[in-house]
Image (tube, rainbow over the protein chains, first blue to last red):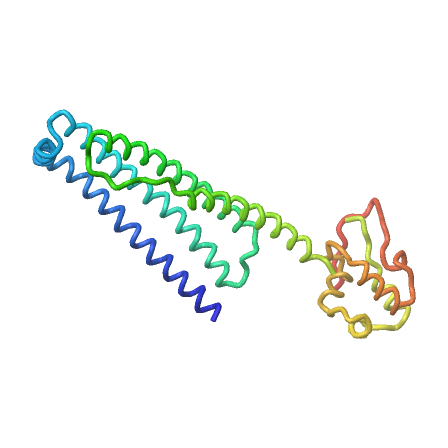
Length: 171
Length: 76
């Protein structure tokens, strides 16, 4: 039961890695198309938002796409580390110091992601002020809590692994 | 480590094997072997107490400190 759950989770993480890659490719292609089709895109934006706002809105869109590509990179690091931890769980030996290091790196990856999310919120607000159609942005409080949780767990794993190491030689 | 484990001497004095000691104290043969060969990092008071009870000796009969000593050679 537990093994099948771990196996299922590992498959899910692999699927998410693939999905993440596809999203990254999608962002990349869209960003490139925004340069190749610069003229028609500007014409469409001028038609919708007026000449004064078309340029800044296009810039804002490109910045958001570039940020999206960076977020995909961060998510890849996060998922790779998670897959490595799951591999140790599947092998039956997860309480090792390396997993503490991995959790701390996952914490930093998510911290970068959350800071990027804040920056996107600023850009979103700026685009909104220009009158562009945007998706309402809200800060991800859950994400910040997970960052804290990961750093705490990393410490717990580091201490736990050191204690286990001590106990291993105790008779 | 300058700590010496003299379990072999005590076993020999009482004509007892490690397997018999293991049965008597309820500690696995593997763990007693780790202790005997000087590979243990630490010993619980409960382990020491059980060994002393069975071998009718003092902790000092089993453990010794030699400041000049290096890592113990594992027993064959």
